[in-house]
Length: 139
Image (tube, rainbow, N blue to C red; front, side, top):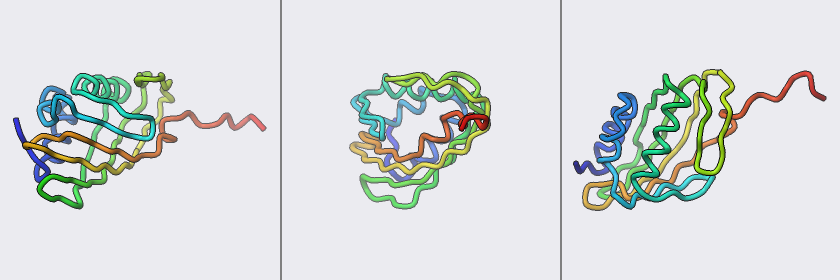
């Protein structure tokens, strides 16, 4: 299934919110590149693992994507991920323990497309919302 920048956000958010990872994967190229402040990941299988980890850590997760720039081969958007952090978030290089609180994580992303599929995502977010609060009795 090809999509392109014009309807990627709607299709991707809808698939994530339905927990339909196969539909999400169909929107990206086989060699999809994901980049964020923690590093670079490549391939659909890596994307599948990352999205599965989010869904497992935040079983009530919901994402809302808001495009603000769309061209023939580019998409820039802001987004809001909400959910309750109830299970460990297993990332490629670490595991973040759950704190049981509801989170609202805002982020921005830039996508590049080729032949109707996303080939690259650069995501920018503050991972501090995932971390437990400091123990108030310390200090």
